[in-house]
Length: 82
Image (cartoon, rainbow, N blue to C red; front, side, top):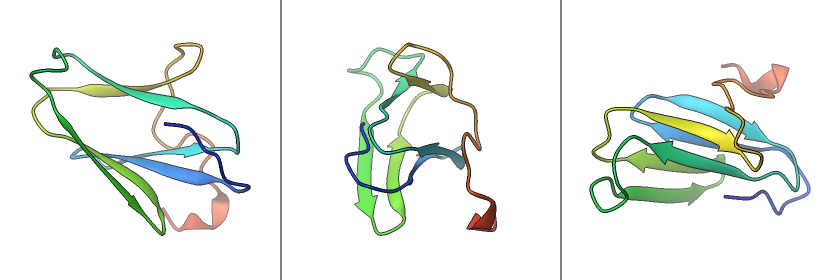
């Protein structure tokens, strides 16, 4: 996904409850250990950001456009209360 807004946008990955914050213009990809046919995603866009539900994978990770891992809490604003 990409942040085409003018402000920070949060990507939550469930069921692991991880948060990954995108600056305007950044792109992240959620990657699983299963083949795409075996691990469907549900994507929900809401006022607080984007939530990706990984329905059947044992694990997932978030990577940037260079393929570098984006850890939980990446660029999290101090005022989020998380």
